Image (tube, rainbow, N blue to C red; front, side, top):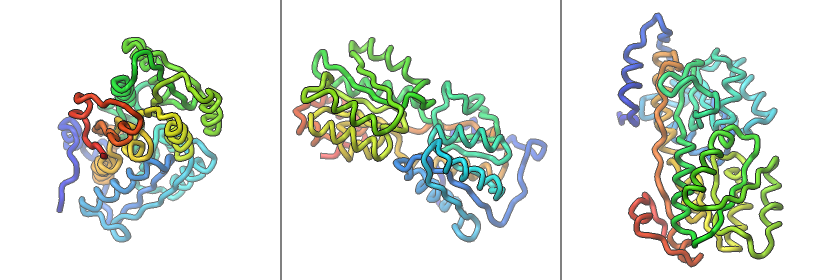
Length: 328
């Protein structure tokens, strides 16, 4: 049997120290896991979760079954899906992204253990602390602030002097509210002027972009930890615009680098899903999810070198040496 990805020693110690007095579960013959997928582009998390649990000995259809709900984060459909899982009394809920995790926390209220697939933690109110999440929940922490700041730093290395960077985002999304002040500070430190256009709907992204005419006043575009710009529809709008104007986009997933972004700084969703499987396994065996520390997703730089050349950009050796994958 293969080993699952490792989690921090402190997390292992927390699991070992669990006793029946703090919620150890009785072993069952079969478990039901409810999955709330609130963001289709992150679906590889589910593939990784299932693969990780299979490696740990869970057999789908025999010792584990999955109730999957692909929904739009924050929608009425999502509310119904969460309530359905509550009514069915599933053994664990696996949910993502951040907005969906917050929705699960609110509706479930600790009555069912929850594992969050990849979520922002800082300044979102999702958990008490990374070391002790509380609320009968745990999950994989997305280093959203650090990742976005590195993304901006890497993008700056591709830009010409005095180039501006464009960001658009859902003005109500929790992860954005937490990271924006630091993004603005980082931009000032790098000597970069940001052009910000917050939106209330995905459709506004395209109309705002094309309102800048044939010669947009910015030389780069950066994607935040945002549900609008990372949606399939939103990303298509941005990448299409970037292709027309040969503007480099710093994306938020490997898929972005493979579909119109010049670079991305992001986690591998499949491997992050496998990391989530470690947590789900621990929850099913020991219970008390809120005492299991949250590991942080590993981040990597991806560069679409061929697209950078097509756009007439020079990729510094420093970036090439840092990159995990360079499609040519």
